[in-house]
Every structure is written in structure tokens, then in C-alpha cells.
Length: 329
Image 1: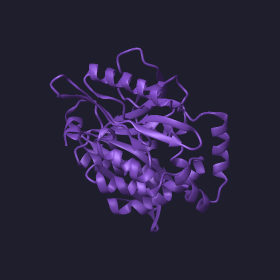
Image 2: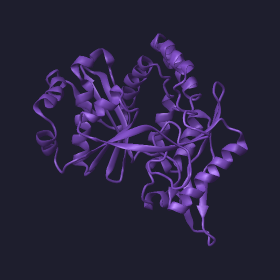
Image 3: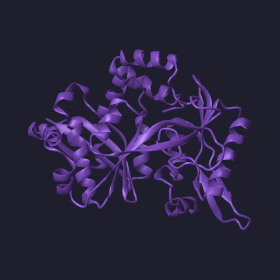
């Protein structure tokens, strides 16, 4: 379709801009898309904005591009991106939503409110895994990867490993105090975007102990969701998972490993930096002002603490409902 052809041909656009996400999100969470275009006087497509109207029973209504993902925001030439950003702000005011969040990876020219609260970490991948192993990591770091290898852990790739990924990820989300997204969300992604997904799970004695779910877009891979069994932290299954991902990606010709968004200075950020990656600022646009979609309120912090204390079966049952209510997910 014209929209997706434009996204694939436009510098700065990402897999998050594809039209399929409108169906994936609406069918698995109930949030409706408000997708917008910018065209010239002759009707040629100059820019696109995949916006979603998040209706939360707990936190009111919000417009987000794109919820549950790390990127979105307007894509196209500079003028189209600025025009679509202004349109989104006007639309947010018209709909009387509490906030608008555009998860842009590139700054938009103009006087727009930018929230510099998130970053990503990018690691260039060399031509061979041996180069990364021998030149990218010191002996101490390599030892952290060898530990789970010696214990007999093994990573397998394929869409058929969704159960293993979701089991370990759902438990980790509970432990972090965050409601888990519905399994149907990932099932819809696999159905609609199978060619982009790289799903890997690290197993130990037949049990899933770490898992990742990410996307290959051009020469870059983004690890969008990952987790490991917290009870096995000392055995470092996450180190083997990430190393095996990098080996697999290098074999496929991918040249950039994107670790996904982080809050600066946190444990996950330091883990990503430890691989030798470089921070990249994410100039998200947040209206009416920074903080509207951050989820860092005192109430949210207290709710997170309470969530960690729930039995896993309860957290997994209630999680999909509450995850849909979080405009900052």
C-alpha cells in the first residue's frame, strides 16, 4: 500500500510507522488509530503520522505515537513533519485529551515542547562475530558470556518460541512492578509482521530463562522487549541471550544493534552501555508539557510497588487489562 511504500522509502521512518500497527494495537488493546498524512497540492504523499487514541479508565485519554513501542512521531520531509506535529497538537486540544506524546527519534524543527527523558543505546556491529568477541569485549566481559555457556544454556531463534519468551517476560514484568501486555499483542505482531521479527529464547534444562523480541529494519535491529529470570541473575542468561542475538544478526548482515529506550542512569541503561554502545538522545515531543506521559508520579510508584507483591498468576491475569490503561507504556 502507498503508506507502507512511503515508510520503507523515507529516511528516518521506522517499522513503528507501518500501517499494520494500527490493526495490531486496535485488535489486541482496543485503542483506535488516528493516522494522518501530509500531501502536496498534487496529492503526493510527503509525510505520515501513526497516532493512537489511548482511552484509559484510570488515567484519562491521551494521543500517543506509538504506544507500546519506542518510536513513532511524524515521518517525511522537514516541512511535513512540522506540519503533522502542529496538526497533532491541535487535534489533542480539539479532543481535550490529557497529553500528546510523539516518540520521535529525530528532532522536529519548530517551537515544540521536547521531553529529553529517554535515550537509546546503539552498538555498531562489525563484519564478523569474531571481531566483536576479540576486539569489542575485554576478557572480564567475555567471562560473563562464557558463564551461561559453561552451564549448558542455549539460545534458539524462531517465531515458534513465543511461549518461552512470554513466560519469562511476563514474570519479569511482575517483578519490575509493570503490568504485562496481552499475549494477543505479540501474536498479532507475528501474524502481521513475521518478516521483521527476530524472536530468541535462551533455555536451560528445557526451561526458558531469557528471551528477546525485536525487529530488523534495514541494517538495524532493535531489541524492543527482553527479559531474563531474576532468580538466575548470577548465572547471567541475559548475557548469553544478547551475545547470541549479535552473532545471529551479524550472520544476517545487520550492522547496528539498537538496545531500545532507557531512562538515563538506570540499571538497564548501564547494562546496555556495558556492551560498548553509544547513547542516542530521543527528542520526544510531549504536549502540553513534559511529564504528562512519564508515569513517574507518586501514585504510579506506589502502584508499581504493590504490583510486585502480587502472585504471578494474578499479575498475569490482571496485567493485560491494566497495561492497556497506561499511556506511557
